[in-house]
Image 1 (cartoon, rainbow, N blue to C red):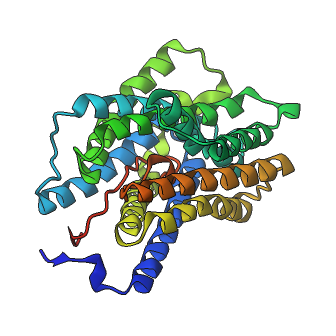
Image 2 (cartoon, rainbow, N blue to C red):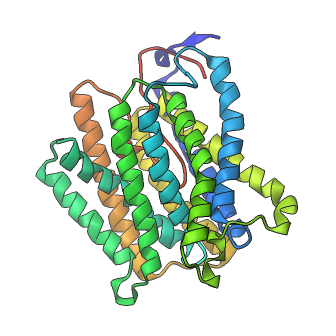
Length: 341
């Protein structure tokens, strides 16, 4: 396996490479969520998350075994990964549970409050210092969340992606506790594996003990007869998420985090376009206004924290600068030299 240095490639070429990887990753994440939206009318969310997890593990484990070195399958920090998996399993089950009732743009816009919550929790829990500029940006962002949830015509289902954003933000705070003691691949593998182990029992508990009306058929535990004919879509669901994760990780590997982070937010306009083309969904004005405020404040918070990290000679990708709906994504450390992956 060859060892390369990022300085062996022209910075402009690395920047273009990183941006292309990030945009391809975002497009695949939208495809992933579009597949969930088309499948959730027939398949319970628990089954979809489980199948996606199995496909991801099947793709990820051989890569880790091939790379070897620090990318260990077993880690002493498994309790932290288990805690993150529990949060993400509950959160993304709620996220997908909202799909039959809300447009793709509406659900994901509310979820994109996650980086704002991460920044706020980092200040409250980790005692990280945030200045007045970031406080104002957080306030503006949360105003955007309120607008996107449309208080004038509020429906409680809009709380589900908001809870998902909160569980995701808490999981990112735990990821900071793990830090660089586990690699990106190890952290992703551990969390995804634990999610796969607990998602079906969680679905059984909800289906058995929570009274669910017919409109929540996608939360009942069963295996629909259409499963066999939907296997190509189910496999594509897992593959799209996994390849998207690898592409976004590669983007942060070859280019500066401050350059790549803003492109995470291109998920939203891509999702709006695809939802309009496939589902004839036109997001309401409130969603558009909220989306604008959330993107603007999220970019401002992320870029200021990245700038602060650079002043401290730390190029680590911060949690709120690298995330996407429905996927476990970890900070990826940069180093002067790294193995080609």
